[in-house]
Amino acid sequence: MRLVVAVLLLAALTACTSGPSAVPSSGPSPGQASPAPTTSAVPTPTPETTPPETTPPPERGKLRFDEIATLEQPVAFAVRTGDDRLYVAEQTGRLRTSGGETVIDLSREVSTGNEQGLLGVAFHPTGRWVYLDWTDARGTTHVTEWAYDGTRATARRDVLTQEQPFANHNGGQLAFGPDGLLYIAFGDGGSGGDPQSNGQNLGTLLGKILRIDPRGKPYTIPRDNPFVGKEGARGEIWAYGLRNPWRFTFDRDTGDLWIGDVGQNELEEVDYQPAGSEGGENYGWNLREGDRPFRGRANPRDLVEPVIVYPLGEGGNCSVIAGYVYRGEKIPWLQGQFLYGDFCAGWIKAAPMDELGEAAEVGKVEQLSSFGQGPDGELYALSLRGPIYRIVPA
Image 1 (cartoon, rainbow, N blue to C red):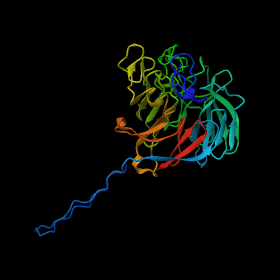
Image 2: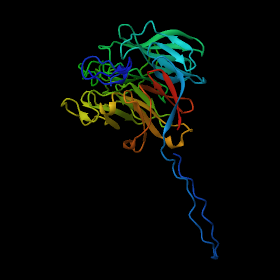
Image 3: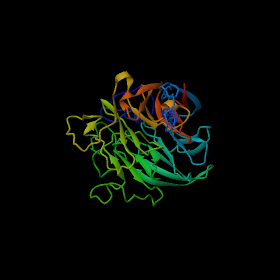
Image 4: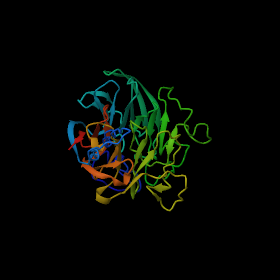
């Protein structure tokens, strides 16, 4: 087990080698030219002209992180339709606003292991319901729904529960996709090396991203999910072969899905699913870690290659934190670039979507636990130490 001196969430954000882990396992287009001058049937002398000026793309710069609030171990971020408040989940069990109001308090019910607790939050597209992903005193994962009117959370019910064989690799991300359905991340169940081979087992929800309609009884499985009706497979599964997909995000413009999957001993990875996918992608774990075979296992041809890979340990790297493709207006040079970072090393990088290998460091946040996206497309960064930052031009 790799030890990372930090805090509770190190488990949800860092990789492990064996046994239960104590850390989260690991521009604008150029301006258009002026219209060409018209010519008459009879040539006439014209003055010499110069090429029209164009506006070059904005140069890549640095970012500034303005602290807007301090909470207790913030790990997840959400916004609600028609509501200008920012909602933040604290790992210790409370859902709070950036102004400090408590909306839901599970602090007496959540487990307090390194990678356990309150881990994810999402609002239904209508804003009428809020969903939390959390682990109870026995370590079981719950996805729980509350009716919410902007003031009080009522009518609590469990949508889905999943027993966890170990205390680490709980995943925890919740997000509604462009299709209005709820996507849920589950890690492989924990320990090290996926001893139960859950990542490749379609008969379990562990090591997967799920896709459901949570407004069923208790939920409904979409008929177009890739494994519906297939013998031995769970119909809830949308993608598989994941170790601990702590954070994933949707591009608000394109609908593309970006997944940060925490590595074992050698590599951290970011996976990608284009909008329009019919689901069913196999991202490789535990046959592969990053872009390399894991422990000599066979590497089938149908595995989906990661789009970003970086080494564990180098410079203090320990756990990838997937962010968002920037779609705001306040940072023109960042437009269309994917932000991601590392929990232990603290760096944040921006990668152009068409040149992901050209990522450049744009700032640092100590104990980076998650990113958030406001209603306007502007981005935020959360630190497990407490601060919530608005990302602005430097």
